[in-house]
Image (cartoon, one colour):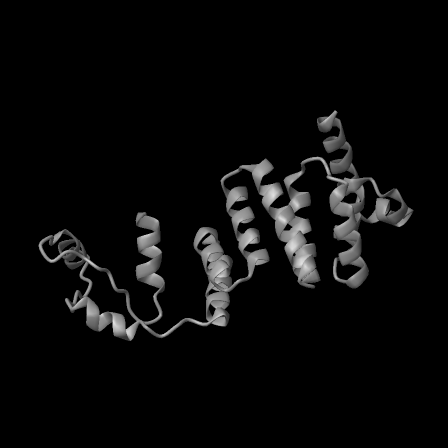
Length: 199
């Protein structure tokens, strides 16, 4: 809770409004000890000022700022308010990766990739697949349909090294050339090591 309060106080665009009971001065004392300006006002007056509605574009912009700052939980909430559910799932998946819950992270990131693909956000879809491969869990062949379709839409988006990484992870040897073995030997070593771990 303290982290959310900290983010709310330090990231507010205009001002922060905290509703407190009149007969309890704990909150006002807390902020006075932090040297914050604390103005008391009637909640009905403050409410009128905050009747303006935040647009979905503003929610999305705020979510992207928080995502870049790796504040994934709050970013996910902003994306939901912006009705950008692919981004919301992406932020949730990144938080799960931070928490080292790899199985759940992969499931949520897979949902994100599907949502991005359905909305025609192919770059974001491929970015999410990059995260999924980094988790280094066995490839789910059901993902190949979406990945192949996204790559067809944006054949030059991924650098060659990432294309080779995808191919190795899902066993698509027809994509790999002899030159790739020379250019990216570390990927082949990683692939062999990970295949031994999966056995």
